[in-house]
Length: 337
Image (cartoon, rainbow, N blue to C red):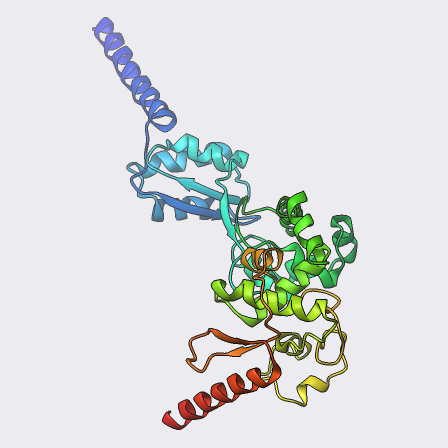
């Protein structure tokens, strides 16, 4: 009888051992998730909160496996993590405990006409908050280490998509932008700017004015050509976007009294380029300045078709004809509303 009891106890112990061994094997080796989920972990986030989010979003086959795996690591690091169908519970827990982040795409695109707009673009995609981003974008010491002044920060941003880690600091982002800036300003592009009588920074300034004038890329080289013609002849640029910049882009239309503002950015009042960019220029705008259309146009104004295109003119009298046609179109449109 005693022998049978011993055999039964040994069998029970073997079954229990097999159960726990199987559980360990499952936790470590067997994929446990049905859905792909993007998990963002902020600093000081409790493990229990992360586990609850994973259970809610990743549809694990065995919830107990997830709880055991995360109980074994104790804590998780801030970051962005992707859990997919290939992950075991233990791998997911170790990934977050050791900070094996999945990169994200940081996108700089669209109109960025203020430091606040850039900061908001960063904070909407990164862990950094907008206040920290805005402070870094105006940190004279940090920017000097990159070769820029705070007023020139618009030129530092090269609109594109960048693969980064969600926890990267704003300083990391700006240093990445400096690499993108240097990559754009190749010897060939520096030579193209020099052929137009411009330094790279001056080319960025002019490109920002082109950006302020239009989003229609096919016309950018023609608009750049107009401003270069005026620069080369020593005439004032008389660019409305530079005046709008003086008023923080609040005016919907630039009126004559706006053009009287005393600012070095007012190209109606002062000849030459403004001292720094007035917005973030896109690559298309930069390339338009480096490879402008060759023509004799000295003026342009919005087209009476009101479709975002422009009409160009060589003489002021031709320009007035175009301007009057545009004003008539505006008047008709307003009456029909």
